[in-house]
Image 1 (cartoon, helix red, strand yellow):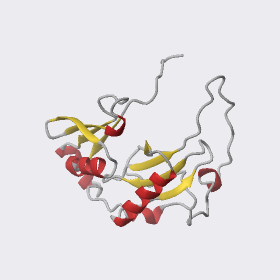
Image 2 (cartoon, rainbow, N blue to C red):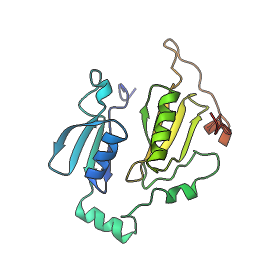
Image 3 (cartoon, rainbow, N blue to C red):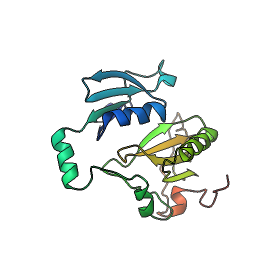
Image 4 (cartoon, rainbow, N blue to C red):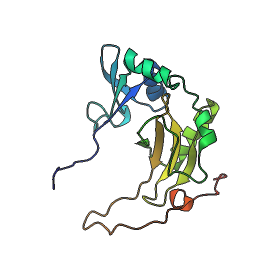
Length: 190
């Protein structure tokens, strides 16, 4: 063993507009700012689990002016999050639309009803939903995917398969097919 890994601690992302991003994560994702460094860095945590949580679960850093200039030169400064929906492959994942190398950031919610409520609220705000609600084969968890203001895909997940405490279980080999990614494939009316 190289690392005595105790689990994922936090995610750090760079963003185009830190105030817009803080508003999204506090208003939509129910997080709270735990600290700020000047007007370019914010640390966020989930207050609902604050007794068990550390200082932060996310670090959000404003792109520098130079980095924003590069995005503008590449035509990537302004984003239309609904535009990504047009490029979604049938039955996905495996590839969600994204503006960078982060595939998605997952947040756990209590149950399917929480995911349904989030989907309803996002639809009421005319915020794009990329996938779901659905259920993954591997992990057997319920999911919903949608973007944050910078196009980072967010996954809400509930009821992930719990690992057996003693001895684990052998890894399974799943087929590479849309049914693996969403075993509820044609369940729009759930």
